[in-house]
Amino acid sequence: MTGYTLTCPVCNKEFSDSYTLTCPDGCQGLIRAKYAARQITLHDAPGVFKYMDWLPVTGVLRTRAEPVCFKSEGLARALGLSDLWIVFSGYWPEVGAFAVSGSFKEFEAFPTMQRLSERTKGIIQVSSAGNTGRAFAEVSAETCQPVIIVVPESARDRIFTTSPAHDILLITISGDYTDAINLGSRICTLPGIFPEGGAKNVARRDGMGTVMLAGTLAMGTLPDWYLQAVGSGTGGIAAYEASLRLIADGRFGTRMPRLLLFQNEPFIPMVRAWQEKRREIKDEDMPDAEQAISQVYSDVLTNRTPPYGIVGGVFDTLIATNGLMAGVSSADAQEAGKLFSSSEGIDPDPAAAVCVAGLMRAVRSGVIKPDEKILLNITGGGYARGRKDLPRFVKAPDIMVSKETPFEKISAKVQEWMRYYA
Ligand SMILES: *Cc1c(COP(=O)(O)O)cnc(C)c1O
Ligand SMILES: [Zn+2]
Image (tube, rainbow, N blue to C red):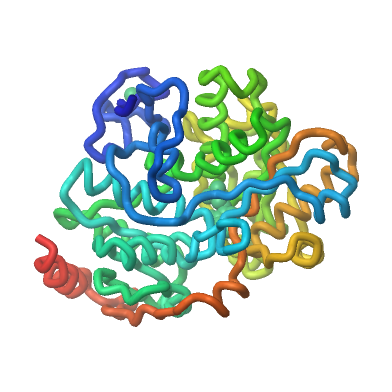
């Protein structure tokens, strides 16, 4: 059975999807998809779309990207764990991992682009200094769907694809990530341009949720623990929502997995807020933010405005899963990354290395018992391998602006580019 509606966690209203990102009544909460299929049936469909029963799409795109889960031997032995399972998102042909942009952002990007094309007529806009931007760029290159990407000038060489991309409008701004986000928001006020929506987008959350689906289907049952390094925490929310569906399915156990989420010291705003069981992140949770961000090993984990306190967000997710959060030092993450490479045979994304370091600490401190069933989300990796195997087309910027460039000048150029797709 296919089909879904959207529901609001605040007013409980149910409504149909027109690429809706928020409750039509204006409630502040993360709207959720409610799927007609109570039990999941795997479809004979490309990559992540095999989980389309629980994705907000009716059609599919061609891709080989999907999460791959296997029982760990090397890392499990090194840490003395008997039931450690790894979900690998990235590029690692030997295990069947073909997220060629290198991270689980690709599992979000494909359903998001498909949902947009099914539910509205328009072009998607993404502001990202890294993995998200590259994932959407890759989808655009593979599917010829247009996308507008805004990045800080310093990140321009991070947007590359494995086939030539003809349908990306890449805008660079001299400034930082926040300047890119602000320009992106203004561009989304132009008719026909839609924001990718971050955690508010059910396609992004349920795309990330396929990690829990792949893991549980491989293990045959829900895990005791789900571990991930977080910047926005969207992956944690997604893992929880997928677990709710798997419990309702009835075939995978009834116990909600506990979430153990990590941030990279010294930038750990959600860890600080959660330690005091506070729903609000305060300024004192991120002292000297700029300085702290410049010191982390994994900069994809440095979101200043995560969906933490919002209804259905990270705080509610941690409550519902009896979850934990912890900070991990960059030195520990680097060490853990080396251990992962040598014990499993593939290079992890720095964020995934943070997660491995967090696992090591949780085992050492006794939070996790050696025989518990652990799902370790290796959110990205295989870059070294990809550099060897895969073609690389670095996208040249189409529009380069500064913070002083008048918006009218930028919007005129954007609209000129858009005419081709109208
Ligand atoms: C984005 C990202 C994360 C953090 O994901 P969130 O769930 O959005 O916080 C972790 N690892 C990698 C490799 C990422 O690209
Ligand atoms: Zn509502």
